Amino acid sequence: MTGRLEELFSGLRERGRRALGPYFASGFPDRETSRRLIVAAIDAGADFVEIGVPFSDPIADGPAIQYASEVALSRGMTLGGSIELARDVSSERPWTPLLLMTYYNPVLAMGLERFLAALPGAGVAGLVLPDLSLEAFESYRETFERHPRVEVVQLVALTTPLERARRIAAASRGFVYVVGVTGVTGARDRLEGELPGFVAGLRGVTNLPLAVGFGISGAAYARQVATFADGAVLGSALIERIRAAGDGDPVPAIARFVRELRDALG
Image (cartoon, rainbow, N blue to C red):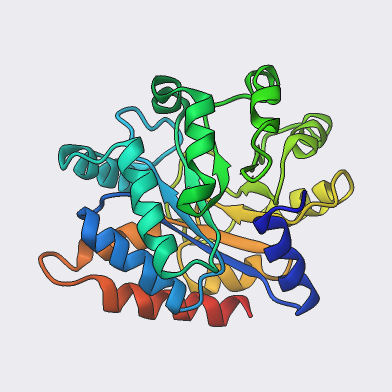
């Protein structure tokens, strides 16, 4: 069964385009504004949107996303609420695949089977579980395979040995999410020097599209990523711009920024 993310990247590749996947923290700065931000990003040119579920101990996330997560949790956002947010967005923009990023503890509390069954109806095409190791994923593989409409996107870090990267990529669907920095999320001024070569090496072990996330700070960085990767995912730079709006409406500034990124990626 061909998934929506796989179809998206295939279509973009045929047209010579790179995928743009902005990340928004579910419920930040509040539920309604996060819905409006996601819809505005889609209208500004996002090919897919990653919705981050807030969690109390986000080990992969830097200060910006940690802050957004704390705010969202304080306002009552949950995994179930994030799925409902995705459903609302999908009802307005059903053609755009949504990717849910969540740590595994909330999934465990809900129950993996119940969780996976809820996603397709909410417009969620893909799933990123940053703290679920390859070995843990393999132990749940039969459950994931009962839900083929949900593409589990695996993460590969710059420090991952090539043979392990091959195994991770073999377990991934839709695309491989390349962690473009050493360490946690957060916007960086420039890309890691070894990143282009690392991505080139991955192309020797997988035919899946390769999207770079973590660290992308703006259009200039995205333009560099477009020269060697199939897509770009960014979140901290968006969170920082949302915070910069203060008590004002962040939607216009985010829409402008997403258009800049879209133009940079081609």
